[in-house]
Length: 154
Image (tube, rainbow, N blue to C red; front, side, top):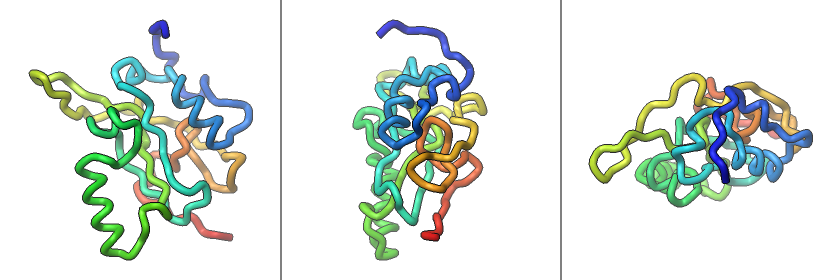
């Protein structure tokens, strides 16, 4: 894959039909911000398409970047314990991050988390064709201003 410059907008990569599989593919090829060039891979959300509970983190960490799955590192282990205590199965929850690539700075042989800036947060709400909920345009996440969002079943 050739490295092209970021376009400045994830909207440039939105599919015409916004199903979760199409959004997953769009996120994987998104060059809307420079993070795509450093991350190992896109870390897309996962869980039931019509989950009543959606948990949104800031960005994937080192372990998530390597695995390509959200919340599999230290924060994911804390989340799993909290969900267990609350009696909620992880398989009933949709988990994602507003940023789909791990932003990091090198420190020796380690990759250290760096806070994403406004441009790197997937912006712009669109209606997904898979539900009546508002999702982030290319990332299958609720709008970035939400940190924990429960969708009504109505």
